[in-house]
Each structure stands twice: as C-alpha cells, then as structure tokens.
Length: 223
Image: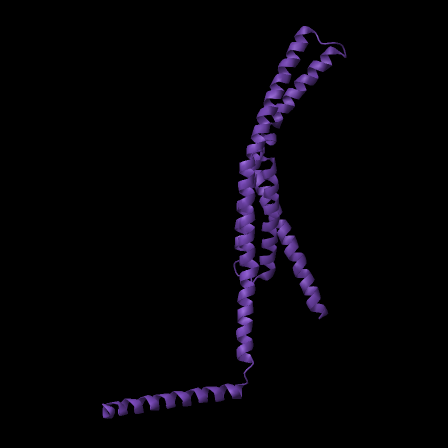
C-alpha cells in the first residue's frame, strides 16, 4: 500500500512536470521563431533615445536653443510615430501568437488521447501541458485589441476544451463502465450453472425443432 502511494505521487509529479515542460517548449518556441515587435524595433528606439539624451547633454542644463529644440522635436516625433506603429503591430502579434499557441495546444491535447490507457502518466502530462498552453494562448488574445477576433479565439478554445475533455473522460468512463458491467454479468454466473444453462438452451432448441417437424408432418393430413 505504501509503495502504491509513493508510485502514485511520483506519477503525479512527473505528469505535472511534463505539463510545465510542454508549456515552456511551445511558448519559447513560438517566441523564438515569431519575434515580438518590441524585439524587432527596440534597437531603433534605443538609438532615438540616445539622440535625445545627447541633445540634453549639449544644453548643460540650460534651455534649448532654437536649433536644439527643433532637433529634439524631430526626434520625439520619430519616437511617437514608431511607438504608434509598435502598438498596432503588438495587437496583430498578440492575436497571431494566441492562435498559434491554441493550435499547438489542441494538437498536444489530441496527442494525449492516443493510447491514453496504456501511457496514462505521459497522457496526463501532455493533457496538462495542452491545457496550460491553451490558457496561455487565451491570455494573449486579450491584448489583441479586436473584440471579434478575441471572441472567436475564446469560443474555439472553449469548444476544443469541451470536446477533448469529453473524449478524455466521459467517453472513456462510459467504455470502462460498460466493460465492467459486462464482466460482472458474466462473472456473476458460476461455471457449473453456466454449463447447465447452455445444456438447457440446447434441449429447448431440440424440442422446438421436433415440434416444428411434427407440425410440418401433420399439415398435409389435415388438408
């Protein structure tokens, strides 16, 4: 009993750790091959900030000269335009990232259903990783800024979660319950009684065949 508890605890820990690794693998992979707008444009922003800082150092704490003020205003205008473009790109990036994450989460959760009874520990770990990735992807869609897209992604994630949850738990529970009832029904009959029941069925079949033959023989005489 103690060993069974320890084994169950180790299986639970392994499944949880596998789920976290699945989340990390998918999240880091998507972020690596699909960079955010901030990662792409941060060097240009840093360059503009350095120009502003250089202008401020040139003043020595005094007021801007007309030339310095014009130069600083031009740099600030570039910063504002870049930040505005970044905001629009962030929304598109968040929406696309959310869709990609949810697609990968769906694939992982679907894979977890394959041979889930034989590989229960791995199946549970993949299912947990898929659920965590689904939550992570649903979180990114909040920053997409598009209500229609957000709603569509959330509806898809909800439908996938319900469908896979049914396939994972409800259907398997029905199959196990049906197999258990059949086993109980057959196992509840003793071997001796089962043999006697078969013999009685054979005797009834023979009597029915004899009666049918007798009725068939009497029919021409009656006519």
